[in-house]
Length: 264
Length: 239
Image (cartoon, rainbow over all chains, first blue to last red; front, top):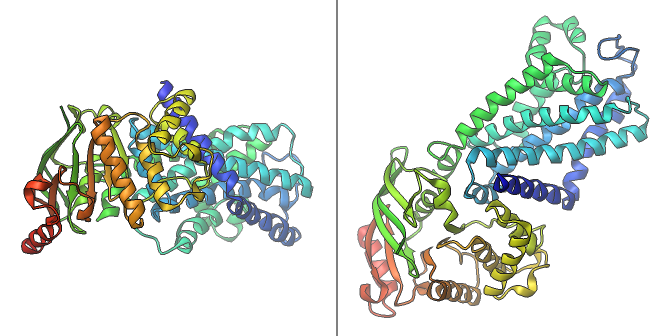
């Protein structure tokens, strides 16, 4: 067991150190949600009235509403960037090194996933700090309660990313992932608008948003920020994680997965 | 003792045969050069030996442990230097070694001791705290070799480790690894297409189009200085 934990700790420390030393990556991860918060949300504030819906107990501004969505967006981008770095071989060398360690492959992939989650959590807290300085007030204990929710949602998005990395042979570039994964997943969710708002324009869109696992990740985070547990969202996120993790493990199976297709 | 034994190994990508019934063995203390032109199947063979792919036909055993049946025990005996760089350039030399040590279950203390030991072995002791990005190509490769020795493997696999290096760095690395085999009794499998990296006493395996077309002691296959033309003739003839 010690060997397992040593490997986990080494992989977490490596990712954290890499994150700290790569300042551009850190800044890019922060600028994106801040532009949404400061520019987009400010512009839409007047246009979008929001009624009181759980977990909120009072009227809130649009900036407050989109905070959970932007947190989930940080985690989504982080997961997709990790996936792309694998697809493009930037990280494939170190992945090869990792996979030749004398540990079960499922454990090594879990460590890799957790390391990605750790980095995304560091990004999220940096974002929350700036949002606080900008004037967004959340329940003080919410900053703590949201941590387990971030772990679960980060694991789910990381598993989706690992699955994509293990199965997609080639993607034109990051724009491909933006168009076919990030945009649909983000816009067809409760990140920017509540479900009832979506239903006003189309019930089909509302249904898609309601089923989108990303919506559930957003709601899990939203409820946790207000010290509440959303079992439905948790169940959906956990289920999606299990499915995509199984698919990723299948993809990284040496008998059939990613490596042999990449070499062919 | 046999460190690596490969028997009747075949592998295909779809309909393309990448390796066809390849068999060979490498004993402890033996430097074995795997020669083959580009596309001969060397990298596929390395991917199979390191379990990045699994072959449906054939058997690989490392220090008597079957790679398919007991992958962890077999991998624990193996040090690997991949063709593509696998160092974290933003981390220090010592941190790169510590990371790898932990993947192999070493404690922080053990990893630090072993790290100092392997750096010393590769004449890089003074570079432990340098950032990896500051090292030149030859030293980066040497560091990868040092790292592959951290867990004291009995078998060292190197996939074209001198690619992109200048003549001096190439010669230094080749000499270092020959010395590891001779002095430490490590079995070495060194893939290359450069015949000048092979010493007359080395064992040579010539792979072409997925088949092992010749094997034996370099000095027995061709007179000294003639291994290059021999290799060219053999692979052209087979083509």
